Amino acid sequence: MREDYVKSARRGLSTIAAFAAATLLSSAAMAQASDDVVKIGVLTDMNGPASTPTGQGSVTAAQMAVEDFGGTVLGKPISVIVGDHQLKPDIGSSLARRWYDVDQVDLIVDVPVSAVGLAVQNVANERKRLFITHSTGATDFHGKFCSPYAIQWVFDTRALAVGTAQEVVKRGGDSWFFITDDYAFGHSLEKDASAVVTKNGGKVLGAVRPPFATPDLSSFILQAQASKAKIIGIAAGPPNNMNEIKTAGEFGVFKGGQQMAALLALITDIHGLGLQAAQGLLLTTSFYWDMDEKTREWSKRFFAKTNRMPTMWQAGVYSSVMHYLNAIKATGTDDPLKVTAKMREKPIEDFFARNGKLREDNLMVHDLWLVQVKSPQDSKYPWDYYKILTKISGEEAFGPPDPACPLGKK
Image 1 (spheres, rainbow, N blue to C red):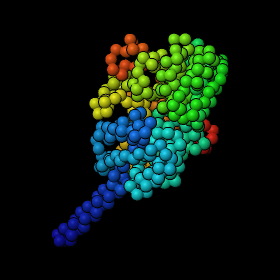
Image 2 (image 1 turned 90 degrees about the horizontal axis):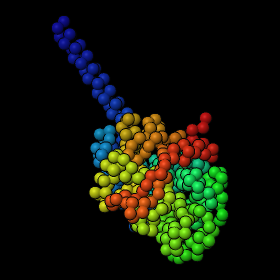
Image 3 (image 1 turned 90 degrees about the vertical axis):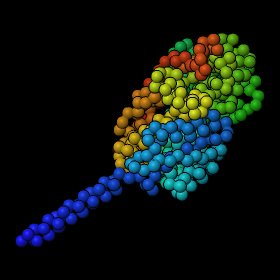
Image 4 (image 1 turned 180 degrees about the vertical axis):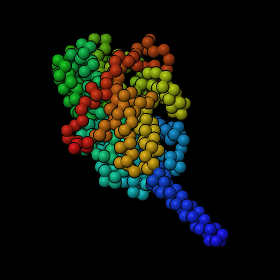
């Protein structure tokens, strides 16, 4: 009898142990990272014209997010790798394909220049892997080319146009003349801003369209000056945008009473140009390092590593990577669709974003700021460049979802 009891008890213990082991294995299977590592690829411009506002600074921002998160998630290491797409769509898509297929990258971030970003988005969609763009503004990302695997985090051309044009018109800048980069990005900025100007009762008096990287912009500035428009709108990115502002200062545009409104300008652009040339410039930004204690604390840590203050793009890289890693932790998996679903559940309220929310069309909507560049006399310390004029709500700046995007439609 006693031997039978002992055998029965042993069998019971074995069964309990087996059940416990199976339960543990099941839990481990539910909370897992593919390939036992979460790999983030920063695909950027390391040496070209976009390298200062993105480049190594974007890499540093991603690395800071990983370090602050603790370096592991679900018990697995988080790694960051770097690639230079040289502003070429074919190189960008080739690197993305290799990263997803061979290197098992889970998430690609940054990717300046819309043409490269759209090429990478195509690969992400094909491979069913995640891509978050920070430094490309084409509205097609969350419009006609929207994808469940691609997220736009920092800005788009509509938000910048609404933020700058609408607020400037409200302040009396009701006549505009545009200097527009003669390619898709510039045309998109001009179109969006023109629509906002006219909708709010202003007038567009004309436009000139210099080619990308034009060495001599004098004739274009003279035409804008001769228009007598109150506002000269700069629908351009680097390098034309800063060269146009510099040339305008040399031609006495500001002294003549005209103002310039940059539809895309970054704090590193202002730093390179100098306050003497940039003073008075109006622009919209998603982020300013000196806005409050949260922005200053993170930005000073970033400065210690890079010797410059972060752009909105670089700050956005940190914000999105941190939100992504928290979503992996909360879901117990790095499955892309499960992670993005979790990313939509929680609001994004950090040092970068105010009132942030990832919408069903994969656009991260958040507040923006209209700022004016200070004069040298008003700047009290290094990188004290902006006077904040007003906040623009995310709903107002980004507008409703594009009907061309099927995501979220029943």
